[in-house]
Length: 551
Image (tube, rainbow, N blue to C red):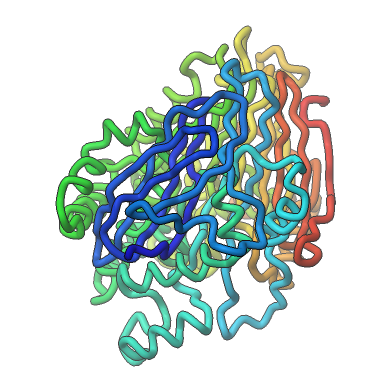
């Protein structure tokens, strides 16, 4: 009989349909059966000896909450007998989109800390959220959980995963105690998603995901020189292809709506073959050879809230002469999605794993470093710049000055005019702390109170969900916002001949350090922010709560 190996994950939900992801122990038909009669079935597809299904659920009633069960070949496998958690449910939004929308977000989650970590990691914010919701099924819950990267750590594995690697192939050959192939990637997802609290949470709250570097390797695609060095190593190709394949299976598929899945030729091909390993591997090879041939970015609409999740890793242009965070096709897609039917949404959320607005010193150092690496101060400085870029992770939007300016311009355009939304909010993670920053457009011609866009524009950064926070991060990012740091940053920028950025900005909240989640409550033209930190299993303490629509 088929058993449930992983899942279920409730991934997509709209007023009348949803998708539920599962991994089974053998080929079978997966079924989702809802208490109100809605449901759906899907035959599993096979990749590298594993069996997956993404079950489309149709016939749901708008504005309702209904419990569901999962069956494999007609046998109920979820919820498990004697579960201590409430039933998993699908909650659909109202047809008119008039309900309040709650979006919780964060990034950087170790399921279990690596054996050699020296920092006390503390409680997991997702575990704490799950425990709170399970204890009070009637409590307000997010309509979507937005996970902004580093869902798994291929390069920093736990002691348990390291022991499995040691038993399978030993640690003598590279990549040693890091993930090497698709099979070992599945171990990371088992460790992360079989956590009882997280498993239940992901079964009952829809989720949106995007990768960041550690989903493949630290500093993934930081520069052309970095990529050339990695391609020269014997283990890199298998690692990258396996990372893209496992991401497509475990994360990307669930980001898509049923209509998008039906129109996806790769998904059709994968389901049409008895063993899709070669089909999916060929896709990953094309993505490696030509990143512009694949789009990992996507759009999700929650009533009158539009979320654009942006790939800031695989879509990069790395040539120093035309370096960009997004290739031309990706940049055009983002622009089209942000400006299309602007009057149809009240809030625009741009999900990018890497913050757009950083502490001023960090921003200026990254812009200076980019100038050095493209040769503005000569070959010797360029070599120094490359070494520094890798050592200090200087690869955020500020390290791609033209892309920083283009995103700033797009945000201003999307947030201006008669059809402007109430807010344009950039959601980010990566930097292992949380803060709020607000830009200002000097000398702007917009009708906003500061001459900028009509919409309230904010950078909202929240990280980590469960990870270490070294003292160097605490000290560095506190100092990075100071007046002294800003003056020091301008000295760096002057040395590199860097133009001043097109906006100024100030920190309006934080920095906050801890395992944490931010939640946006969006209703009509109003937006409220709540930051909560994990203080113990089942305990999330409110650290900050504010109205984002009052200037």
